[in-house]
Length: 471
Image (cartoon, rainbow, N blue to C red; front, side):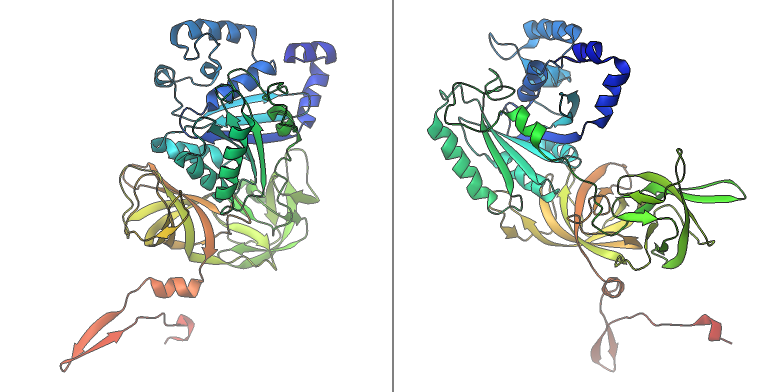
């Protein structure tokens, strides 16, 4: 049913109410160059009746000028909006499209396949719950297929749909489908993702995209759109400990001081004992304030204002957690880093570090190992080039409160920003939090002192001092 018909049948109020109750799935398309990612999104929109008449008329007009699909309608033009994309028939920037069916709502990101635009692909993957990984049936699993799969897995995407596209060129040969399926599954043994589905299709012709194709009798599962409708959306992260990063401190008058933000995980209740990190100061929650009234209990994903029963110093970038939480503050982390700039990573250079609402400075102290996306083998390096991936150790000028990315996306993901150009140069996922003590000791290197011809090594260390006892 089209949107117009649904509105006409239900009325605008009932239609909007139904839309609000539908679950939302955020997903992305990725894969190698010219695997048909934009065409697939265009086919989903076209065959599910998500294109308005004026858009369709404009599409036919553009197709006559810059279409690349021969006698067929080039549906990729619905997504490829940049002139360079239309001229070259490729995707350069990430394009987002919203559509809905009678069952659910979707936000789909069309990401580029070229290696030089891997950084743009990372942007699309960072908010997705499901990845549609396209594979050209003529060529099978390519380097970019592996690279994008590895990045999606590293970013915590737990659902993959491998769309083996352009099967019409291979006469929908079952042997081709099974060979590529086996090829991909062998590579996926090295990944953490366990939910992988395979669909033989032709995005250009529409086979197995919205409706089942008669050309693939060997394929007994659902067409792509039905698989997407049935895929579980990301649930609120209520099982992990509560994390409330403070985004704003509000003080409209002398009688009110609140801390605004979004609860990224866990739950918080009015009257609950909490502590503020990294300071460690403790208090209890007085109120959980929203525009619609106070809450007795807040769950992950909700935005609200916290007021406390004590005058505790809380600033933007601090994190409010339960009083008995295991969260720690540290200034040294180990993380998986994707380098996203033409200029290479410089060890020891100071970069701006942004994690949620927390901003500080950081250096990459060492590159623990690089990761070969083809074999996932580890290697050694003293710098990182554009699109290279490595596990690194970072040292920060201030303590931060963070979690492993696997446990909490919001408090486990960060970006590095060049301090001169203000360009984002790296995106990282925290894997391990290193202790404050180890971090403090690592800020200083050993040094040598020569005395009476003898050379001795010395290691600086922190000396505890209580200034209240000084006279």
